Amino acid sequence: MALASLLNGEANAKSPLEPKAPHFPAKAKRVIFLFMAGGPSQLELFDPKEQLQKFHGQPIPDSFIAGKRFAFMDTFAKEKPKLLGTKRKFAQHGKSGAWVSECMPHTAKIVDDLCFIRSMKTDVFNHDPAKIFVNTVSPQFGRPSMGA
Image 1 (cartoon, helix red, strand yellow):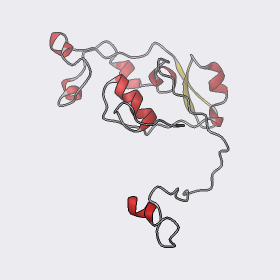
Image 2 (cartoon, rainbow, N blue to C red):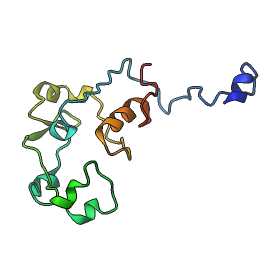
Image 3 (cartoon, rainbow, N blue to C red):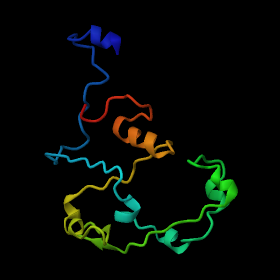
């Protein structure tokens, strides 16, 4: 990157940070990113889990926790954690058939105007570093965030 910045203006030197052309022409004119720390979980709003509901209150299977790290894992030795389903009712809405819980009746009416991203993943397993990761792409405190 240093060489590319030194060669800035040269015909054959392109910055690796230069924006790339999108796969498709952009349709959106604006984006509102809602980061609702402390807000209800997506599991309570937009992500019904039928199997989780089916096994609500039962101990978590060993196959699920084997070899994985979780916050407060030392409490697992005292008592095996139980699966916790939602108390909310869900229904599909709009042409897209997006699932929305009863908590969001207005949002249910406008789901076809929204974009739901369901592909985000991180190995950061604790809330505070995960919140930092969502906004900075790093679990390390002190990195610049979106909009900075």
